[in-house]
Image (cartoon, rainbow, N blue to C red; front, side, top):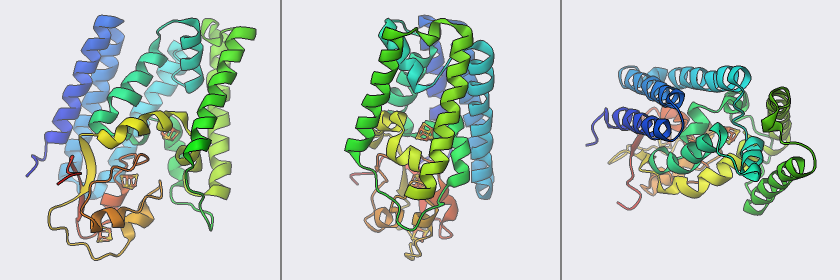
Length: 288
Ligand code: SF4
Ligand code: SF4
Ligand code: SF4
């Protein structure tokens, strides 16, 4: 049986190691940042073990703390833009900044440990989209990989064009803040609008470039939402109905498979919704 504290301990250790590595590469502020995230995640995951019925409340607290810190302090005060456009601005200029570091860690490295958990623990736009969870139109539109990759290419090209033909907004403090605020308004309003017509969390499911990237690696995650051994599943479908990413969780439980869906954001809503304790976060049992 997996030790109850394995997930919190491993995630804490990972964040500290990441902080040390980035400190060696950049500066000590990143060590404090990642260690702070690790401590927050450890405390809250440990509290969930004691108070499992408060799982969602505690997760939203984590998301508010980490997401709020990234947006209000690091982005708006310090001026590090963590958004997708900034990554392209930086790359086009050939410079390595916080946005690029954050993207590589959160979207390439972390998915091998905790899948797309960044989306349900740290993304501040995700915090807004919590309001649209499972708010579905009558016929939600399924993700189409061609569309999501086309979107990623289009926004990347637009960002490159801005840098080449206009100015690198990353080089100008005032302009950078305009981009941070403008892009947030665009993503959040587009997300609300699309959800109304295309189903729960439509921006996340159908377009978000971050999820398109991390979704490549998340099926290989060490930890996944998985059925417990000898799950007492009644087929009530509550887990599927609770899933904001419209994943058929019940089918995974029925087949006794860990959820290796590219869009699982490890929000654990399916776990909270299951009255029979048939699902939990566990180490990878995909092939058991
Ligand atoms: S899919 Fe994109 S917008 Fe949605 S929570 Fe993840 S990073 Fe944030
Ligand atoms: S909520 Fe639990 S019991 Fe109901 S279908 Fe899902 S896993 Fe089975
Ligand atoms: S499968 Fe469960 S953990 Fe994954 S997104 Fe759906 S509700 Fe969240």
